[in-house]
Image 1 (cartoon, one colour):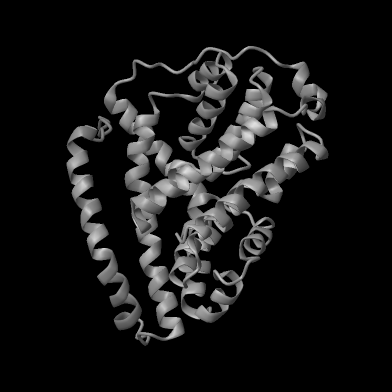
Image 2 (cartoon, rainbow, N blue to C red):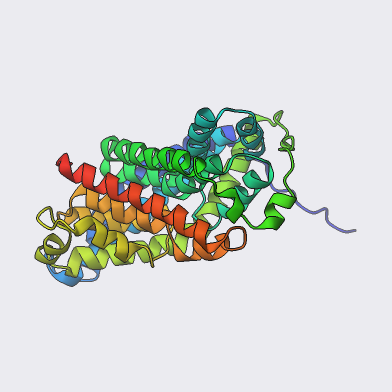
Length: 348
């Protein structure tokens, strides 16, 4: 007589949620003392030393950033399940230029894509007949001002900096989209893209999903996102820890301080060859701000890394000419420089 296989008990998410929330809060509050204990007591590093401060920064930020991603991104993914990309693309296709550009930029905020992974959806916009300026507004805002960046900025620096960053990024995306939309650029789109243009399709997502199913999908989406950005997060935190522990404050002030009129262009030029997503840049931003780098210069550095990367240009070359890529990059760089200079001029 064979034994029947045991079935795993199914625990409803609504019962797990309170336990998960309590566990998340407990982990958040013990993170700082645990990181200091591990760096200075367990490892025996000296407080105030270069190595000790760098290791303590790393041990503090890795769990802090992961907690922010796991906790808040699950909530954001759950809410986003009611607004799938197919519905947004169909909605944008029938709008005027200004509402569609603003809508595309706002849509980019809730799509957790890096600059490279946003390109396929950008191609879908072009093929659906959405104006080119509107598609560029999405391509700028999606990597630059997505919910990952906002969640981490809010959690690490508070709502003020997070909202300023969102306003600056959306402004660059909207103005950039409007400027590019006024230029005769479609002649520089590869012919095969224009040849397959078609109207936006209807959404295939079942909007009658239960709340529990949406919660399960949100958790699965969050785990997938964390897996994709984890390496970038760890690398970014490692760079931030090095800056925090080893880079002299005087050097940072000399290169990017308010007294250097070329600080913003310099950090933009440094950032363009680099490639990361928003999550990987936040720890670097944290360390730079801690060294006294002005907010405008720091935001210009972050925007440049996530919005104008060399790998993105390589992928875009499949659908547009080098001339169009150069025009796109020039408009975005001009917007980023304007944001950096403006924020620094305001003393932020």
